[in-house]
Image (cartoon, rainbow, N blue to C red; front, side, top):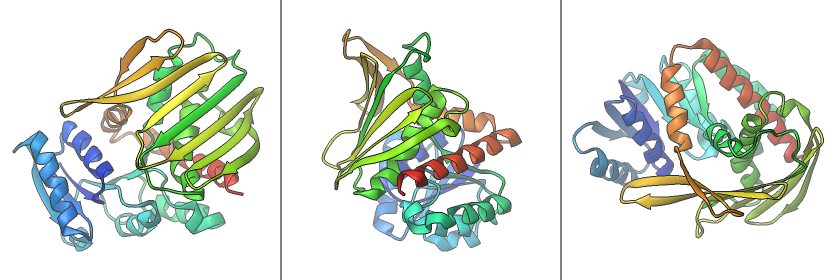
Length: 301
């Protein structure tokens, strides 16, 4: 199996790693910068040696070569352009969240998504926090008695102002969709954006009787973390690097105990490759994507 990866950022390398771990034997990096494409390949060769064939090219390669998979890891503002280019292909498509920019499409995003999904039924948006939420939920016997919830999430990205909401809200919403299971997105109310600064977006909303506060931050000078406060329990997801391996763990602030967990991206790809021919899997991901975009748009207006 082979895959074309559109984009030459660090996240493109992350996707490449898990694609290789799931049987992809040939990867072609596609971007405008030849130097960045070569850098991606050199970084991956340090880990995978000669197990995989690596190539690089510009976007024209999509008209010349067939790919089993196309993974879109470009900047959000270019997702729609790249989706148009590949939606008519027979390739299975994986795309980083969000599927397209709401700032670019505004209330026309639904029309665009309809056209894309009509052309290609096997488009999947990557939502790793669906899996991370399940690890956090193991700390609670029930979610019925939660009354004070705070979700603080910081990444090392460079998004500012409204782009922070575009970029990080899908993580927060998919997390709670998984944490509370069904009908979370359908029961959100009283959405209120409280504070927007250059590097910080704060908002709150109600889910049934729960009040949920969101603090979303991006600062390329600081490390990524997720802190979740539920009643008087504070849990924090952290990462550390052991040589070339990233270790994910959850720390309980009250007890100081640490629990190592699977990488959510690894879990996403495990489920993805198990469901390559499962029609319901693609339908479920599509439904989630459309609902997340709808709620995310509400936070911007």
